[in-house]
Length: 139
Image (cartoon, rainbow, N blue to C red; front, top):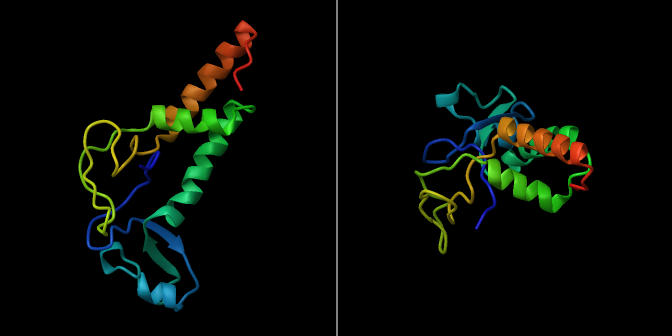
């Protein structure tokens, strides 16, 4: 089961996140999507999946670290899961052993839900301040 998920688009490819690529390259040509106004020679393509979500997820972790410098990887994971927005519709990748449906609460399709940068950073800031005031080690 995933811990959290990133943004995805509609079928057939569920592409959503527009990223730069080499203009006219195989990737530019293959992942161009007229529905998103990307063209096969413009240096932009739409993606989805782990590779497309890695940079935004790392950015959220950086925001959290800015508010809670000593947060451990385990606490970071707990925080991201606790502050994620529940996703209740859709399904994961359609492949053997996959294609799980999203439901209310944590599920095999979307884990705890969609990462919420604002909620994660706000929760981290509040927790860190409370720990500092109480003299606790909250790493």
